[in-house]
Length: 418
Image 1: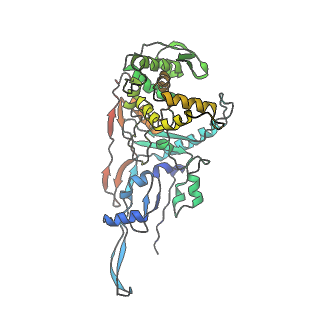
Image 2 (image 1 turned 60 degrees about the vertical axis):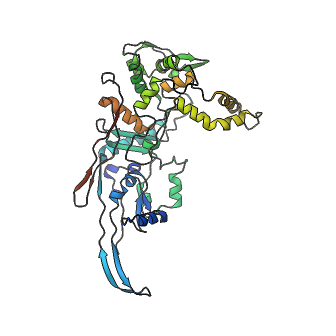
């Protein structure tokens, strides 16, 4: 009896679970659809790709199952063989992953997270949680993915032979850190200070120069609030290079605030110009990169249009709270916020603009988007669609398809500025 065997070799001990993805048995609906389409590459015993490159390149990797025809009489009794068609193995996917680099990236990501858990957060007084993370290594001039890791991860072999309910529950468990979530492409986070180089590019192409000096004070008052530097540090008047070196928040607050004062004081104007928002979008933030790993998250640019749409989607909820007397189950903060949101939740204020300039607020990015953005800075401004696949090779060694680097845009910033 012939049996299908599936194994995951681990050169240099790599895991690569979120890049590879996984397979699971074909469903009845999928089988019906395949039969209607005349697709003979699957049958009731087939497994199909559900995530990662297993899903993206499923039709290449699957092959063609063999079958045997038999003649039967009216009673269903087998009379003899009526022909046999041999199965055809699937094609081979050649990737750009460097196993040695992947092993180092996975190890360093895990070790760094473990180290951070031993360090104390000066703000909270407790050790850092450091329960998740991601890392991406990408060729700046091609967009090819050299390594990609996400933590927590899982053993891709768990799907072989059928996964148990307990195993599946753990993959989706918040207590376990949602191991099935590939944070490099699906995790969405506030970019923080990694955002500042892109804001620098936007400023230097919209009125500022490398010689500009702004005050890196310990705080900047905007409206009725003081927006502070990390640990209230101050460096006096500095330029963009120094501001990036010391990651000065108040320097970039001033940049964002100046554009808001110049273009955006009408808080209800959804079309007001914002050079920093425009630059972020030019670097591809707020949109999927187009990587050949399904399920990629788009991130979010928290601009005026987003804030207006968020207001529309949440207005009824918060206005309902605000319209009633405060009850014991509603905290003072929630009640006050609901009243303010109901009245002016659509308004894009100066505080939104200065938060955007340092990668805080409601803006979210994926680690892959950041990697591609930094690659564009390094390569002179070209945005590539990140790609894992390099080629498809037939079982007899013929190269059926090569995947060339795909340029999808240019950030429009002079090379000298980058």
